[in-house]
Image (tube, rainbow over all chains, first blue to last red; front, side, top):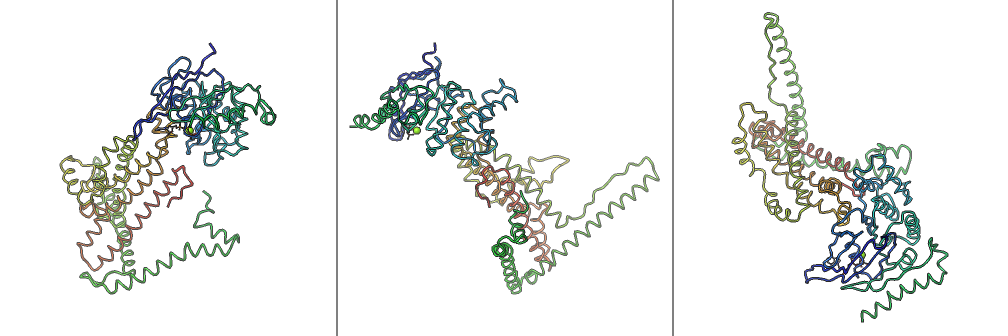
Length: 264
Length: 332
Ligand SMILES: Nc1ncnc2c1ncn2[C@@H]1O[C@H](COP(=O)(O)OP(=O)(O)OP(=O)(O)O)[C@@H](O)[C@H]1O
Ligand SMILES: [Mg+2]
């Protein structure tokens, strides 16, 4: 029963372009278990965001399909919450109000007003944003905006969190803080997460499995690497850990060598 | 809103507490000194030029004659107010006498019907322009939102907008007049026909900037925000209310400001032709009147039209600033 939670079967997509159809993905096959943390890694433009958008329901696959708990995905919905690359907060609303918009929509009737308020504050606390709840996006830093974006996604109580380079635009220190927060939250809530990243360390540190994609056009899954490092993971302790470094070099080798061979 | 931070007040305040004296004096010169210098130069040129222009109605009014006419208009308004007061006093007296003689008599109160004073005309103009502008906004904003949301609706409506936008109010007015007299037939008209004619002409001319700018504002909703809305499965109405409207408000207000400016300009012309009480009719009547004071009075009206237009625009600007969420954009 606890086996397959999300299943992508032979997913392919073709975008219509002025110069004829462009095939972005072909035969993407992936099975994900409840509570798994999956990283998608691959060269720029290979189709990572496209995979994520198909799972989110924002794009429709041309071939194949996505099943979530046995049910077909064909439109966006809050049970597949998305953390967008550039936070996508509504700039005229405060952090609290941004989360509120999601909570009001998802728990329209199932929570009372005071329960909603508590739930919003709880989620902002999870990402350590309770001190700046009533500030607007232009009054907080990039890292804080990303935290609010995560809080908004968590507040939807999604079955799956989809994160598109959530920490891509942040400095190394802020990124490390947010990664720690994310690991903490994931341990507590046991969410299923698919995260796109360009950062090899981030992928190894956070993931249960790393999905490495081949270059486009017609990109597919090249290799899947299971990361068998004990939880909780400590970035400083792992820095000298030979297993950790082994995984790291596996990913790097895929990105630099195997890709080059495919290309030639 | 700290009054000490207002741009007109701040330099004086800082001068008082002795902060950067030299800079403040500089600021004050720039803010008050230069506009005053510009005004003085303008008045001198005006005086010099007007004394050389001789019209069939006498010399073109300079600043002094214009000011005199302004004072005389004020006196007329005061006299008229006095007359009105007297009228009501006499009426009350008369009614009281009749009721005394015949206790069953129910007095009828008649309204004072003197000619409107200059300042009442300003009031009438403002009422007309705001009615036309308000109605136009109620029509234009929803249209702007709909065509902003749908590329197909935009393609269908845009050519019409582009064609009607440059049409002069003077071309609309005869049509509006005929339609109003054909359609608006009641025995007890709540509105004067001349008022309706000017108002609808104003309405027709100030629809377009609001429609265009609202649609452009709606187009500033990014794909990211649309994705958020889709993931949350917001209904169409919630999407418009929570995302599209706030996003388009800055552009919408830019359009509303342009519309109000056009409305005010159009109104003066419409009042002249439609003979609707207001500043435009005042100018026209004075022109027809052709006394030696007329040009001076028209000059007063011209300046008043400018000042009222300026105040209307500032009012919209203040409103725009109050409702704009993006405080980083400087509005001017
Ligand atoms: N809506 C679309 N229409 C046409 N082509 C598209 C569309 N979306 C993506 N593509 C194309 O599909 C390919 C994959 O794009 P995608 O955005 O998924 O890449 P990515 O791996 O996320 O890249 P990056 O790491 O730079 O974000 C690209 O070649 C892109 O040009
Ligand atoms: Mg991408």
